[in-house]
Amino acid sequence: MKSQHTRILFCLACLVLAACGACPAVEQNRQAFLGEQRSEQPDRGHHILVAIPKKLIDKGVDKAFKAMPDVPIKLPGLGNLNRYIKSLKFKPRKLGIDFDRTSAAQIRLDLDAFYGRAKLFSVDLAAVAPVKYNPKTQTATLIIRYDIFKTVTPRLSRGAADNLTKLLRKQLPSLVRAVFPTSKVRRYASKSLNALLKELYPLLRKRMLKPMGELTRFKFHLPDVPIERITMLSTKNTWQLGIRTSLAARGLTPKETKLAANQLRFSLSSDVLAKLGNWAIAKGKIPASYNRRGKPDKKGDFVAGFGWESDRSPLKVKMWSKDTSGRLDASTCLFVQAGATPTVALRGKKMKVGFKNGRIEDVIGPPFIKQALDLMGISRRAFNFSKSIALNQRLRLGTKSFGLTLKEARFTNRALRFDMILDD
Image 1 (cartoon, rainbow, N blue to C red):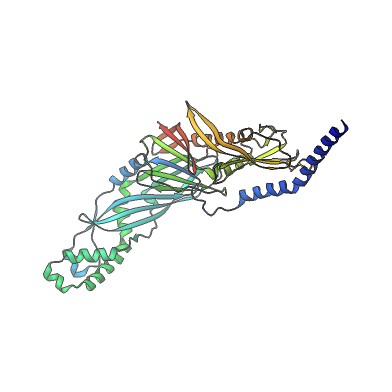
Image 2 (spheres, rainbow, N blue to C red):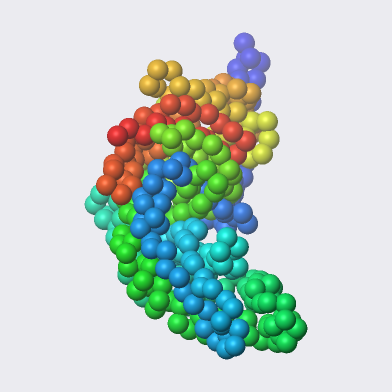
């Protein structure tokens, strides 16, 4: 009996010594984790992408573009060549927008210059439009009217002079062409384009832009995340809002995708999902303290954190011991990390979060959680928080306002993706 008591006491002593010896390692681990949350990522990209069918937005833009009159503009500075050359016609090609949350939007209107059916060159008009942000409702409104293009510098596309030179030579009668070699015609073309740029904008503004009135209007309910910048990106089939946060996380690259006319896709970087969970804990949006079973507990002995790594169990859930003031408890210093591959599925109107390949990956101090799933349950709150961010939106385009209904949720390589139906 005495020897048995001795072995028990010896084991307990070993655990205490292991715990004490673990304190510096646990503290170092915790500080390294906090440092990672602040460190800059080389590929921040777009942390959130919201893809909207182009037809929804383009209806308003196309309506404005169609209102632009077909006004011929004579090329200046051609001298004796002027009698042989007809007028140019300008047609709008693309509207581009780049804006942050609270200040101003950079607007770019691209116009193509045509001679008959031949496109000669493009002209870019750049302007700044104010973004109205309401912090109470967390909405940003952007109205693009013709009169925002007040002080702009038109820019010609590359090769404009060469294209115009070829056109001018082609339009000249053969007898006249012999008198005007290519080098001479190019001088005329360059002179004409320089003169055109000086007087083009006043002409476009008065005769073409003004009849368009309001080109389009956007109103977005922004996600409750630390937004740093929003960029509107145009692809073949979609307009995409690229949202970058202040979180030190890897982002996404917009890819061409096809959506139904009433479909919207909300993509959240997997790395941002983890960093967003840590941000939500710091802001009190999800529980910060947990007990030994990984359950929320204000008096719990542990703090939690999330990570994302590129391996077979990419989602990491971490727990560190703490005292009542939130510092690490020097008497029982413990750290445990579990990893798993998350899975999401829609069951009716509810999103079901699951995990596979779950295992305890790292322990500092005496082990106290044997089942990875006990610890992975903490991460469900991060998923639910992300779901609420995606669904708690309304989109206003022009005079129409849309709500959202979740249709599908899934993980793809680097993102958690929600497909939603736009409700009128």
